[in-house]
Length: 63
Image (cartoon, rainbow, N blue to C red; front, top):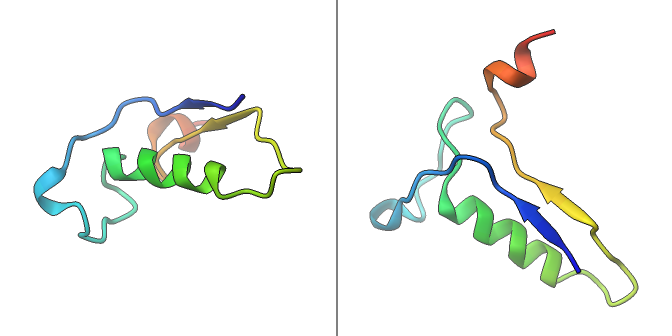
C-alpha cells in the first residue's frame, strides 16, 4: 500500500510535455510520474508514502 499526497496541483493537459521551471506549480503530470515511479519499483521495495512538494515554496524556504 502506497499513499501519495500531492498537495495543490495545476491541471495541464494542453502542455503535458512542457518542461516546467522550479518556481512553477506542481502539475497532474508530476503526480502521474510519482505513481509510475512507485509502480515500477521492484517487488521487494515498498514506499509507505510519497509527499510531493514544489522545489521552491514559502513553506520550504521559511525557517
